[in-house]
Length: 156
Figure 1 (tube, rainbow, N blue to C red):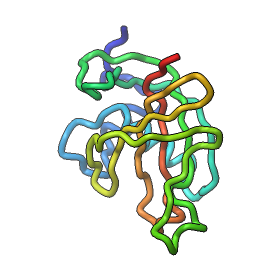
Figure 2: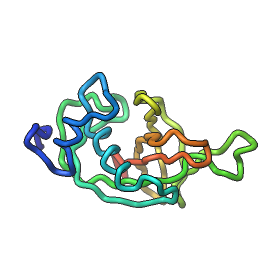
Figure 3: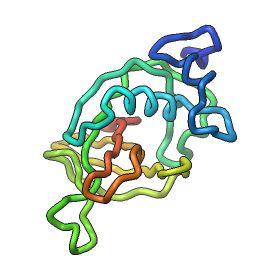
Figure 4: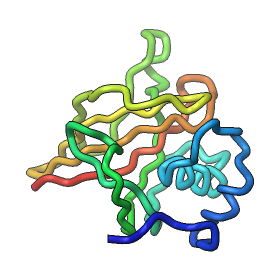
């Protein structure tokens, strides 16, 4: 079980993002927000799905008490960027898009992040189940909106 990164930890730009808080968050940045910032810089301007694998710190979560556990774990988190709304359905109000081959059941709203919101959902593929966090990254037109999906727990 690893400790949260301190101010000397520069892995994945953690220290730089803590010191240069462009969003002016009124609370301590969480690992999830910092990882979002790192990946946003990496893929800004791209609207197609971009799989990534990033070594980062994040809080373990449970299905009943998301992000309330104090322990931090250092793991590789699987991240996916994909469009939130289907362009073809824009006239009908839009339809949320899930990663290819997955089915989705919506979970509760988790928290707000200035220009977007995070939400928990359960995605299923074959015989495995994962709990995923969705972050809205860029405030754009609905059919161009980029969402970050991060696997936070697996159940087999």
